[in-house]
Length: 208
Image 1 (cartoon, helix red, strand yellow):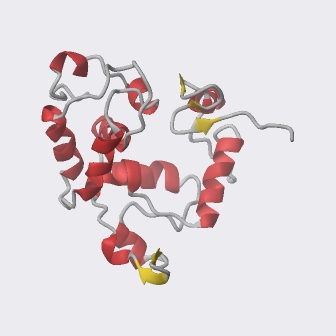
Image 2 (tube, rainbow, N blue to C red):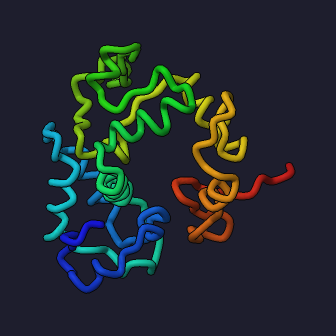
């Protein structure tokens, strides 16, 4: 789907699979993923431009070798969705996730969220409550990994979908029960008790 995709290690790049990206085992570093937040490129091609720029980046490990969380993985997945669907990632999420799950106060950009019902963000700075909005750098580069905005009620709709075999409150199915099970199935072990599924950290509950 992305025949031009490569990192500095071209041979290793050809071995990165979709499952590696989903399970955070592609070899991209946590630092690489964090640095993406500094990219404020606002153009429509921002996501593809940023993924193309990975051509000079080195992997921290061989694909599939070990777990290391990196936002880069999910940004690449977002570009895959955009490429296969033939529409922007934002439009795909709005039409295929927000709409069927009735997430009416969820947005794919900070600008849309501000025009909607987004509350002002604050952070504690030396004991003072400080407006944080002006420090939010998110651009279209990181929409798949860190650029969606939602309300508590809408997130409840999203969680119900996960708890109800892929169906929303309105009985609209956006994923099959088998798909939900696969999504939640641990794909990599982080330590003796903690594992990572496709976007989910899993661990056993203890009886105290």
